Amino acid sequence: MNELEAMRIFVRVTEQASFTRAADGLGLPKASVSTAVRRLEAMLGTQLLHRTTRSVRPTADGQQFYDRCRDLLADFDELQSMYRSSPQTLRGRLRVDMPGGLALATVITRLPEFLDRHPNIQVELSCTDRRVDVVREGFDCVLRIGALPDSSLVARPLGQLRSANCASPGYLQRYGVPRTLDDLAAHRIVHYVGTLGSKPPGWEYFDGTRCHFIDMPSVLTVNSVDAYQAACLAGLGMIQVPAAGERSLLDSGRLVEVLPDYPAEPMPVSLVYPQRRHLPQRVRAFMDWVAEILAPSLDRA
Image (cartoon, rainbow, N blue to C red):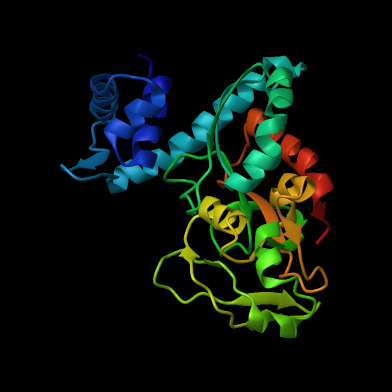
């Protein structure tokens, strides 16, 4: 195993904070991963990682080495592809994360196009409701919906997603179709919260300038996007979601849009990625492709 491959292993161990998770992600035996890191430490003459039974974290020297390794590996990937004129020559692994709704509705169905265009790229796609740690978990880029917190990440704004108020036909048959905001008093919603036990915001509507919230009765609170959608389909209440993610259900009639004049505030959509001097071409190619296929579903900010 050469030093470059050992550095890749060290970077993955640092980001995963685990030899076991790094080995699983790289498809290597855990012993080989441990050996690679020990050889790097012997070569450099310093300890790179603090190891305990519960966690692995970089030493001060290890953090500096990690930062330099990230830049060096990115530069090496860029150097390898600098003179390649054909998209088929882009190669390597892409680790990306995005909301499940957009992934299922748009990205996964179109992914064969990208992989046909770049057959030597392998994609690791994560779809989770939580906000992943882009750097620690080793993601090349992440698609995020909503306002972005201040961070060291680079953000590429793509546009805004229109929100839709949705209900199932069965729900509307039982409770009627709301025509005005005053009608909401006789209706119920499904609450969505990031953490169970936190206070739900209520029904949101955007007047073009600011958001307003209306308290509404509810019999169910969930912390999963899939459960949120399933609860609406089951007639347990109305939901407020990005319209693009529900397009197939709306087109098929399994969900119905209500109160279209009172949507929630449009949500910004961005691609974020770690700060690097040189972004690998395979990452840039993937982000350009995602921006292209999402463009019809997004409004300009």
